[in-house]
Length: 464
Ligand SMILES: [Zn+2]
Image (cartoon, rainbow, N blue to C red):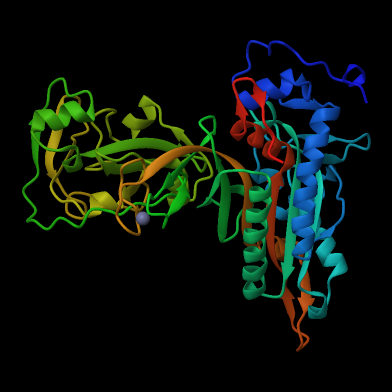
């Protein structure tokens, strides 16, 4: 076919608001066109590339026993109510009513539909293990849809679902996906790392993400230069300082004028940041006031804090809310506060005699000690890992890289099968819940990520 007949013009310039190279070059090459925020048409050239990526995915999932099928984009809300996610998921799920006034949703993912199918189709242990998948449209109403096909609202995903007798079966299918994904991303020419990740709204016991390194990525991954650790910052660990053993000194109040930052406070008191405690205030979804305490040289990680508190959302507390528990913004410490849950990082437990706020403007306390001067409701790891902190395995300073998540794998366990009554009869005739896993790759995002990693200043250079 002549280029003159190709539907989709090449453009000399991309629109002004385009930042990412993949976005710019795919628009200029006539591969994609926006219809609305986060909604794109794939023109013939773009569709041709995405189909090739999908074929790579299809071949590798077929090779581990996947059976391709197709599940719907529009779901009756009933299945999402059965799993509890109709209420649990926020406004990123689009809900609407059909003409009969029935609640409906647009598919974000398909665990519910698979669990519904499994309870109808599976009844005997002889039918397991099983692996099904589809390559289908999803809708997630992202607040910040930008960056071409990297972050969209309507997208196409390969999602596969494993159904097993037990955890050992799930472990095997999880491992099969691990290697299938490695083959897929290698064939697509992507430079990536596999990192431990948060299970988030999926639930379940374990999750890994495949992260393509890119300065435009929205995730931060911590990587050990020795290659023995990599994790999404949301869950990344680091080697903690050894417990400091020294006698507990008497607590005393000190006037600390003009110490508006933790650094100024440390300088004024003549102590390192690691000998200060800082307070961070949130209100959880339950309405509880969450009083987080962490050493001054570290920062609170909200994902970890949500997990430690069991709160799905955390909102920064207002000055009125802070005063209501007896604390003072900028001068807060857990000494003497009331009506709140005190969540303390491990760093506080292991470091005695910390400088902390006195809960009144202009004053701090010297030598505060957990257990003697205040109690914690929870002691947990709520600290953010950042570049330079030691690897949890070997202690080498970790590096931080921005990355685009191109795939993820989840061990769901029985979280969905128990809600849906998706069970099988074992060899003894006993009813057992099916053990599930779920595994996603966005084909459009993979295509755009290849473009991110394979271009020069003149345009795209697709790998063979
Ligand atoms: Zn290491």
